[in-house]
Length: 358
Image (spheres, one colour):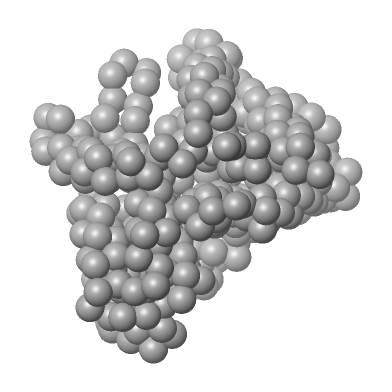
């Protein structure tokens, strides 16, 4: 039973990776040929990240995940240090006013991805050690919240509001399931609303994203352009799609067709059936991970698996939601996100073997 869960999870992951490889080449080949004179440019870059992810995935699958408890605090400190370093001019790379990456030639690394994983490991370790004190505001809830808040602040300074909200959401959900009082969580949420309002509506590009989300036709050639083109792509695909490789929106109409809006190209080329197939695969993925959470034989494994699947599910939901116009547009992480998502899957498979450990 446990072995079949791991096999199912691994199989679904491989299918999703294969779909990603095919669709990234389909969505990016013409753009890559025009810009870099190499239609395989983005595919080769994707495969390099994929290879690195495969190696790290098999590494974390082969270890005893419980040893991560010993490295929870060092990993957290390293992540915080990298989040500080990326803010330093000349060290972190600035793109469109945001300083979120370390870059060497064609390899880029987004430290917030490592920070997300480190925070999940730290929270799982904290809950496994002090779960009985989570209900106590000063002894349990506040220390965990302080670490979460400090990391969120560093990521917000990049600025990256989307990743900040994702990390905070996952952290608070983990604390809630661990037994944190609803009154404590509700107080934090109520207190954060004025700050969130200020962060969104005091920054012009964020305000425009929200307005474009509410009414993209208000500025069809500006802030609403991406959403409109994405919806055109999804609508053009119909039930069965235009056929693999036959997207029209990828011909310089839809910006970021091979990254942020890859789901739209899937809809245009493979149709409604293709998009529903991808969503079904993610649903099966989540279903199998829920079984792993249920069968984990220690509290650390339970909450580690819970945090990992929450983050993966949240990323997938945001990507699909943005493409469909159900959520405001946001910049999505690239190759480093793929690597850490694969590491997360490796850890989930590892936790699924927990009954085999002595």
